Length: 503
Image (cartoon, rainbow, N blue to C red; front, top):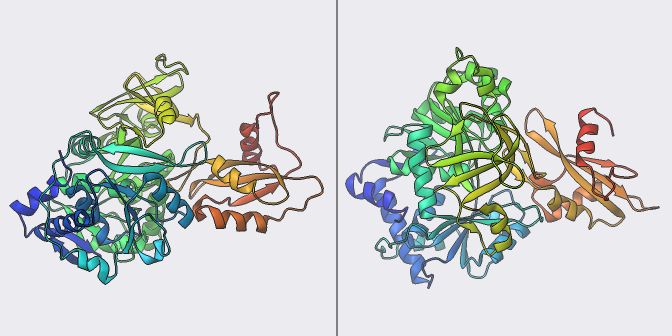
């Protein structure tokens, strides 16, 4: 089982089918894309890379992203996608931890990246020369072989490498057709959000169907550009975090636009408020499907279908609208107490998922793997409840994860950076509700006695050590942090203060 075979089969059967666009410009057909992937595979193997070794991608959305993903898989290699918003130091930590043998970058994101091997800018003659290599025969891979090593933040402040196999991703791709949306060759997926995350993962089902793949000319997300692509190309689908959906809806309302040209917008990655999806449906029409998953079970846990979103006559429609839907076809979902005992319907506990999309474990982290995977079940760390119809409603997270604009931010990672600032005695980071981003990062900082701490200094250190999107949007200088009898900071109290508008 090799994911690249889905490209190979269409490249053979229908080589003239349009495959990859940059904006509205056709870059290559399926036959040409398959040839480029095979030649990249040949070039990578010729450098001495062996099956199972890792290749890091640290770049903005770019047409080369897709051919590199499939070229790596074609050669039996493992893709390590890195969020283009990360700080260079964070990307280098991931490169070292994954033992990546080479990296591909765009200069605007990865210039100066240091890795143990070649670092190639995809917009240079050096990259173009790789496409002149002799094509490699598709390499056989076992279903359990690693394909995608995705780094997600951990409660220790260091990212964890989620190991996803060919079977994990193949199952995810096939599930899209059953639980999310039908796809055919007329459709187009637009990569506005980062291809290192869910948007890029959804290349897999669209490759299976031989659909069109569209990278915006800007290499990112711009609402006006996305609406232009929908108008010019038609039958456009995309994956979007709720904050992206909100920006699309805002643009449509401001410009007097509807949903013409859009086929399906799949949203997930963060909570979507009921009023926001009602507004989105009102402005753009019946084009939405919600999914809930994690990096550890990519895009697959539950889904709230187009039909369920539109079934306003159902007596529990309001509750369903606030849910994340029902278990997707290849997985089981249950809610348990802290000891893994299943809870009665309606009671809140930890959400568990079991099935063929669940990760193989965390890269070189047996302790974290043992904590997350128990008796075949993934302990998600998310809190929720199930109703009698199987609809899951998320209530809170057992971890202190902050989700801002669909990106995961773990407070301890930010706190550890803040504690390096001279004069800082303590720091506690929480998420504050925000109508645009879902949550924003707020830091409560206690100065050392007699020390003078400036917010400008705190911000400068954060900008030097962590990604811009992780840095606090607000800093609150306080005399002390609220704590319980055991000395643990009461973050619930900090959130309450923010909610009530108190310092």
